[in-house]
Every structure is written in C-alpha cells, then in structure tokens.
Length: 420
Image 1 (cartoon, rainbow, N blue to C red):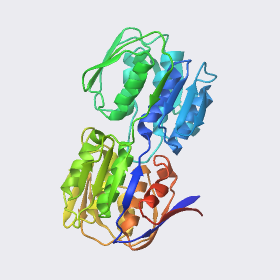
Image 2: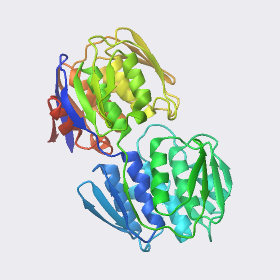
Image 3: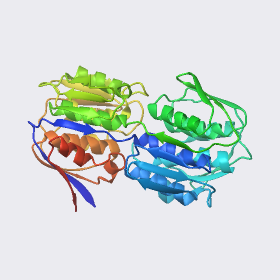
Image 4: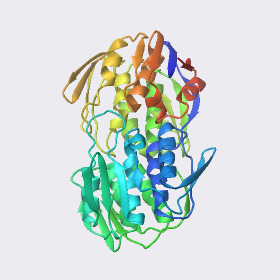
C-alpha cells in the first residue's frame, strides 16, 4: 500500500505554475462511447488515473482493445465477446454503469452489475433504467445485475425526475442509435455532458440543444470513429485554486477552461483571494492574508459543485469566523470531517450542514482517505498543518488526481509518496 507524507508549514506560500490534466469525469463516458462504433475512437488529453484504467479494462473485457500512448488513447470495439460488465470491475467505480446504454443500443443486450464507487451516499441508477425502458428496453434486476434487452431502441420523450449527470450521458449514448427522435428534458448541464455530446456528434450522432437543459437526438443507424480532445478537469482546477487561497500563495493554474470554474472562483473571491485570468486558458490565484468566512450550498452545475465541498471546507477552517456548508446533492458526504477534526479543525455536522469554526491551527497526524474528494481535502489540510501529516488509503485519491504530489511539489510543497 502507498501513502502520502506531507511536511506541513502554516506559513507555506505556494508559487510557480501547475498544468491541469484532462477531466476524469469527461473521459469515462467518452471511453464508454467507443462501444457505439466498430471504428477507432481516439481521445487525447486523457489523465492517467485509476478510474480511466478501470474503464479501459472494462471495455477490453467486453471485447474491445485500446492503445495508450502518453496522454492519448485509441479504442476499437469491432464486436463484443461478452455483454456482461462484471461486479469485480463495476464495484470499483460507479461510472462503469455508463456501458449500459451503449451496449443495449448497439448490441441489443447488456448485463451490468449494480455499481459501487465512493461511499458518499445513495446514487441510484433508477433514472437510467426508467429512461432506457421508455426507449423500449426490457429490463430486469436479478442477483445484483441490471439485465437489459432490446431489438432496437426507439425514440421517446423523457424528462428526468432530477438532474443526473451519468443518467443524461447514458441516455444520450443510447438515443444516438435509437430509431426516431428522442427528447431529453431536465438534463444535467455539467461541461462533461456537453463534452460527450460533442464527441458523439463527431462520430455522426445528431444531437442539438434547444435550451441548456433539453437535448434533441435524432437517431442514426450507425456511428463512426472520431478524434476528440478531452476538456480540462474543473475539479482538479478548483482544488489547486483552493491550495493557492489556503497558503496565501501566488501561482498560475494552466490548461483550464475558466468558465467551467466560475462558481468556485466566485467563492474564492468571497473568501478574499484574488483569482484572475492569465491568457485564454490560465488563472492566477493569490491568497489573502486573512480568509473571510462564508456560507456555501452545493448545487448542480452551474452552481457550486459537490466535488469541491470538502476542499473548500479546509479553506474555511482558516477563516476568521464561522462558516456553514450545506450539502444538497449527496447524503453522507461529510466523512472527511472526522479526519479534519483529527488535524485540529473545529467542525460540527448537523444533518446536511457542516458548521466550521475558524480560525483553527492544524497539526499533522495520520489520517484516512475515505473517498476521492475527501482525499484531496486531507492533502490540502496537510500543507498548512504543523508537523507531518500522513494520508493513508490513497487509492481513492489516485482514482481522480494525476500525479498530485508532483504538481504540488513543483509549487513548493513538501510531499512524497511512499510504499508502506
């Protein structure tokens, strides 16, 4: 097992520049989309993180193949030898459910284990299932698996009961090969959804957006290959911007799409930090000497992302006053609180709210990473804690951050990965 050892410094000021990787949450559906065609799909700006490896392994197990070179991956699925996405792979990553729509749309059958992934509350797939049923799929839940069959999917009008990112993505892919027109309403608006739609259109799909929450898909008989560059990771970008604000640092975050992180930037500016554009694809963050407290509620894009809640909580432990974070997306997403308290934070959870009392000095300790974003929060806290912080079970961190210790080290942090 590996762990991160961070030698913290309450006076640390990060400086220099860091380049962001491609979006993990955009490349996963893009890999699943390769199941929709027998031709090659070539993706660039692909982050080398555990979730990407898991998804490529899943596609390979179904009968596809891939070639990875640097930040590029070429995938080809001329046929499948199995229509079953096994529990061993799916339990490791919830996004594996994204193969459900492509498999039933192209091959007429899919057997996908009910998903696992981070333990951050219930994330049911009922919206995926209900949408596929409206497209004509026959679905049964048996022994922990979703079994779907269809001669050919047919277009339908579908309105999601609530916004769902992977649900929107799954039905975009399924509807691309359905007969007739499909209209999806109350779609998720996340940039990763739009990135998938752009790839699908390059492959020959006919998707347009009459408004930001409505997708119209005119189904085609088959899709072809395409080349596509994955958008930058907005959550990694936000994490590094918080690192700048937390350490009163001054550095540039490059390879970003500034409009994708506007809600995070707004909150950082409210905390007193300066975040300004530096060219078309970079932001410069400069932290303030004193962090201001604030109240934040998570919400679907373009609101403040739930995936930035834990990182922002670390910043607010250093604010001059009391802050409140309200989590509206997932239940049980405050597992990082107990570990931050071990480092000296004063945080009380009240249902879906966390009350953070600042400013509290943090001191190093051994802490356990409980999920992907909680892991990042513990790393950030370790940067400004006195003494040594050891973050264990970093396999969660490796699911979504590429070489985070190298990138932070390049900014002046003292952090290393060691094998225990």
